[in-house]
Length: 108
Image: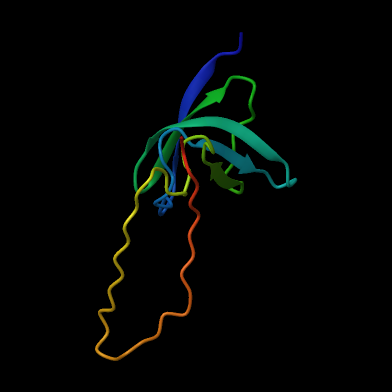
């Protein structure tokens, strides 16, 4: 069984949507995308993740990316009732061009 190690990567800024549980990857200079592991800690400048013992570590020139678990991070409204309030804080009149939604019945 391969052992895992926790590594911490430091950046000037970490994107706000990265969170614990996201899958972390890197793309090396040969354009190969390598899965590192799940994020275990995230701050404004660091991402920590568990990385398998056989996984090659990223270098300073590699591109770090992440993906979210589609089972957890959904963007649709669920349930039987939703209410939306839209406010225009401008001092001039404006016109609303379009409003869209993704609504489905979650249970019967």
